Length: 450
Image (cartoon, rainbow, N blue to C red; front, side, top):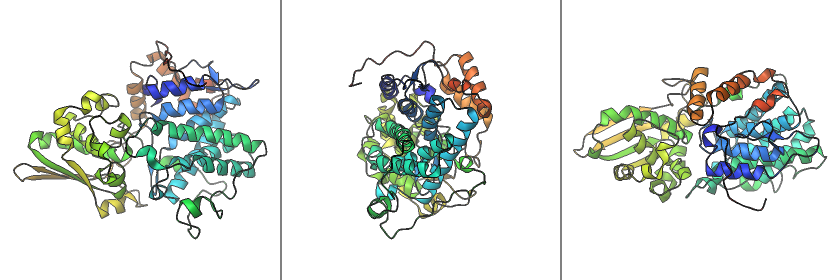
């Protein structure tokens, strides 16, 4: 995902900020995606730059339950610390597995959205825990780091409401950077607000369901395998996950609908989360604005469904251009699309049965003569239970598609060979988990404080 975003403005700005922060004397530093492996920066700033690159196109893995998450956001901070301290591939795998395990457990057990808290409040603690596993730190040290990360990454969901800016990509990178700093403080013997979750003035008492609330966050016992990473879902399309299945349905419906000028209305019956987060239930007029930011359009299922219906496809760049969003026929169709909450789709969204859990909906198309066309989809085609589940070949094809025109084929081959051998990589080889475009990236030309 990061390779296709390397030239985008938010990623360029984050990279240039990182380049102002050299690693401490005697430390290796972390690599920065898009720059040669011998270009190193302090690990918290590598986590920052790489986290923005990973998140910018909203094109990496997702886990949805009581709340939302993109567990791949754990990888940049854990990788940066591993490179900085000269650790190997096996250590990195252990750290990433813990990051995924903690994030999935928190997302399954604690709903932040109901309290308008952004989901990075789960990411800071999970990344801190992953770094703790990477470094094999004492439990008490990790505990303090997790609490510090929670305390400092609890923010409101306004980053994903109204006019959505590039902070949507920066927010997870901020959580990763904060996690690195929290672990560093804890390793030096410094504590955190404690107990951060259960305290009298803590997270649960004043920001969640109140002092009498009880949450269950289920984790594997000592010695049990960490399998949460297997519960996450890939994205075939560069858009918010709850639109993935609906993009596939729109592509399927296009030929059946035919002349789109005959469409009077399209109503998407879907889950509470989809209706209120990316649908018309959000109450955001920006979701119907042709001049909206890319980040806002990414969270507008009426826009996404209109374009996918017209084009029979979805592209991480072409589908979001200002020209594409402003096309008169697209705007006309877009304004006819709305969402409604359907109790059955909400129930399936929250189901714990993998065969029943669903993130799709039922679509009713009404034509100008009163005729209707109805179809539905439960999961995206790329989902493990979908029409075309992703396997290794599809993941590699996705990487190749995103790297095309940015990364030379030989460099793509080298990276894939390195990534596939991850558990066996030596500390020196861990530097190979970056990619260098050709021609080299050029500075963005902006100036700040650093």
